[in-house]
Image (cartoon, rainbow, N blue to C red):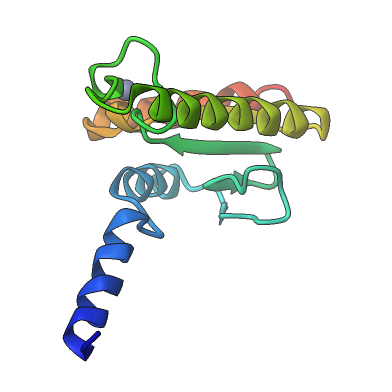
Length: 140
Ligand SMILES: [Zn+2]
């Protein structure tokens, strides 16, 4: 394998699983605009939540509609081939998400999921994040 191929390959790999996805960055911006302190990708928490508001005991997952199976969303269509393979993969993703959320709740965290398709409009997204924070902040 020549050098160029290796570079191209690692570039392709980085495209497959970006560290910070665009929907995530958008949610972060909204959270930042709201003025609350948050941390990213806390690997000591189940499921490594994308955004963590420690003071609010609130975690936010920004989920891709396809991989995490956003119900009724047109971005969560079923691939046309290898259906069994995909179904198995999806089932495992959904089961893992459920287990992580249950564990987080057991640890006293509130869990908010923001779907990729809900990050398109900045104003709606801002309101969504604000509502999630206020619901928690009001309880304290
Ligand atoms: Zn969706």
